Image (tube, rainbow, N blue to C red; front, side, top):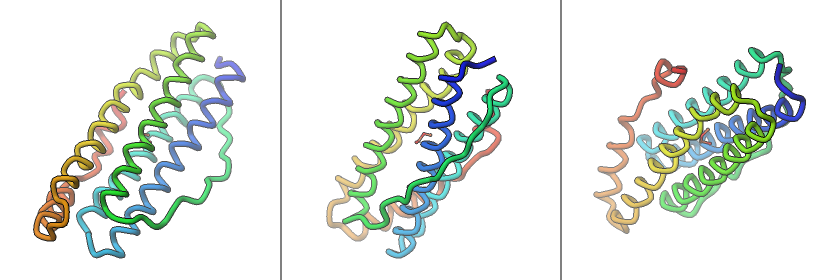
Length: 171
Ligand code: OFO
């Protein structure tokens, strides 16, 4: 059975993952308002991915005899200065989430909870990808600069991203 301390921390992380989904959905709405449907589609897929991250914690907590407690999800920012501003925000947000995951790992190690530490390693690897994919788009947007044509091309490229539930639920 999982400790009360880890139960609380995982519940907080479920909230953080759901907030991430909310933030990315808000970014999708921003891009929709700018008629950048490819960027919006990328954000929608990202929001679904975050929801899957939350559900993975939800299932794990239940499996370990913990109790899931859902809390309020805070409102997210809704306006940004530019697509570059949005993706810089994604990158810094993912860096914050990585540090939350690292804190959870440290807590699991301190408590000698090897099962939770092992479970968390999936998120450790996932955060490497999350940061890298945000950083990649930041770099591309910096190259795009003020070019409308290049932004249009990037919108088409990002619009090809789809959410694959099967991959996300892999243990
Ligand atoms: Fe759940 O990885 Fe992003 O926030």
